[in-house]
Image 1 (cartoon, rainbow, N blue to C red):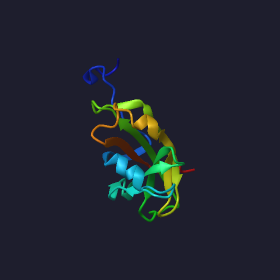
Image 2 (image 1 turned 60 degrees about the vertical axis):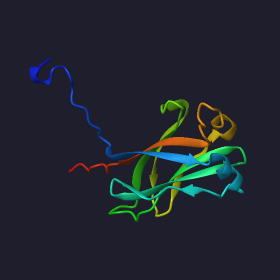
Image 3 (image 1 turned 45 degrees about the horizontal axis):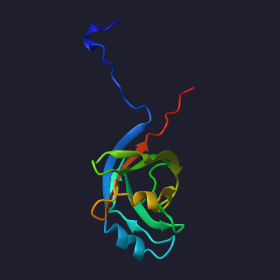
Image 4 (image 1 turned 30 degrees about the vertical axis):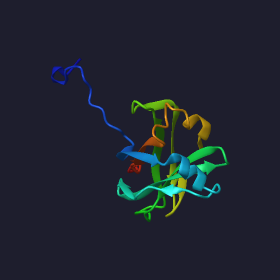
Length: 158
């Protein structure tokens, strides 16, 4: 250990992430939301939120393929100074104790290139699993989602 002032704890930072936001979504009236969704194209949008200088929304599709829910992230900004934005998106269902379920969790990253483009988890979870009392309390399902906007890589000078 060369630097005793660090007390054995290294500094830690992300080399790729510019900004991150954690958001909780409550699906209140879960049963009615399922019954009111007449097909794969019906969704409930979140309010607009900003991460990394871009506006986003999450879309909850309660009746995907008749048996699953889908959770998608949608870009609601025009791109700035480039033709793409890198993003990492993760979602988990919270159990009755408010903890993320390791079985009902997905995360992945991609690059989006135009306003309105959506991306995420088309078959996030089967509805019959979500309707277990461990996850659905008082006809309310809670999702925890994380959106991280990635920094652009730097070019080396030759």
